[in-house]
Length: 270
Length: 253
Ligand SMILES: Nc1ncnc2c1ncn2[C@@H]1O[C@H](COP(=O)(O)OP(=O)(O)OP(=O)(O)O)[C@@H](O)[C@H]1O
Ligand SMILES: [Mg+2]
Image 1 (spheres, rainbow over the protein chains, first blue to last red):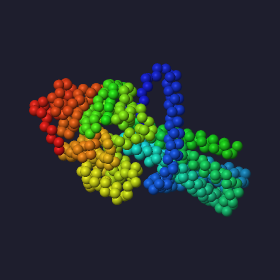
Image 2 (tube, each protein chain N blue to C red):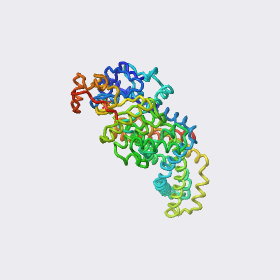
Image 3 (cartoon, chains in turn green, red):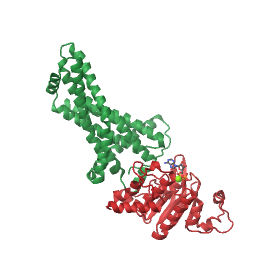
Image 4 (cartoon, rainbow over the protein chains, first blue to last red):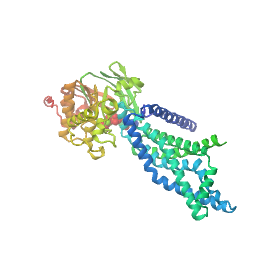
């Protein structure tokens, strides 16, 4: 059951009681978010039914394809900045041809998924949270539940699948554009030809870098969806609550993306 | 059919329901009236377990909805249709899609059959030409009627209406009254209606309960309700210019 009743506790009189409550609250929220994730995974058995499939495609379009523009620009410039910064330093040692490896590896392993996830968290995650929040406060979620239409199956599952597929794809697309951006800077500013740039990039980047990057992007997509939907469903108190849910979604997603990104890197590279 | 047993509920900073007991029988059109903020919506929400009582319980036939869980709760809930005070239509679907939603999601009907039913229900609530409009493009009263069409499309056993006529012009309001009364006659549906509108309560209600400060202060048939001596009821009646003089004519539309 998604709809929750407000809970009233007597006011806590000591600092310690307040702290304890905050901790309990945090644990409860984590638990609920995980439950939401598991029930969404449980609903995936309906993913190939006609209407669910349509909804997934719709979400893939509205959250994935519509983010292409901003992701293109951001990735391109990330690649260009990376190439320029490392290129300037490497030039001191006459090693500017190595910008290929520097750009490719850092984009594949970290910057690509990370940038994509930040953009998606700020745009798609916040819109999910606002939508779920508005639906919760305007009684649409309780109404769905009373009609025996499961909001998790109806709303969360399509978004989860769409984001789990689109984030890695967008991240990969971002990496390609970033590498192109780096190449442009290399050939125009640093005197590194396209051929040696690409050759250098391909020599140092491994398949593992690609896979780990895609795994990260996948996890980020799941995190963004679960956090935003959970925050949306937990919304109280009208428009102010929706604003708060959106804000918390962006902050929480950013934090989790950083932490999970670190953990994955740590697991696969040490 | 629906029985409240000493229900108490604390919300925010006060007891919204202090000690509420009443029973609604099968096939009744039961009205709950009372001033704003006395917990009429809260009472309705207890019937489908959107709220749980702090003490006491709510029984639906032999099931205790206040303690039901999981599948059991779902089974009880499928017996209900509910019209929310705000309508609660999905904003990104058109009116027709909203009304069709329960059929699409929960039944295996074909598209043509669904289409026919949707038109029929929208006709019934007086919205035959709002099919392709979005909820944001129609008025509050129209939204309410569209929500009503959605609520009745699965033919529930018990219908809960939260202010079905608030925000409607008098003519549409009486049409909705007629619809509620008509469904009761034709299908024997049990209806629970929350309203400020004593006109509807007195004309189509079988019994009326008045809620005031967490208690049921009066529960009687319309004919007795207008003669009630309870101060709060009198004030409520007087405020809508309904006098004791002469029995209230029961003019079922
Ligand atoms: N979710 C909630 N959280 C806190 N307080 C609530 C909540 N829902 C209702 N209340 C309180 O319960 C009281 C009764 O609310 P309710 O919505 O039932 O009133 P109502 O009788 O339906 O009024 P109206 O006719 O205006 O709809 C109000 O005082 C309100 O403050
Ligand atoms: Mg109300």
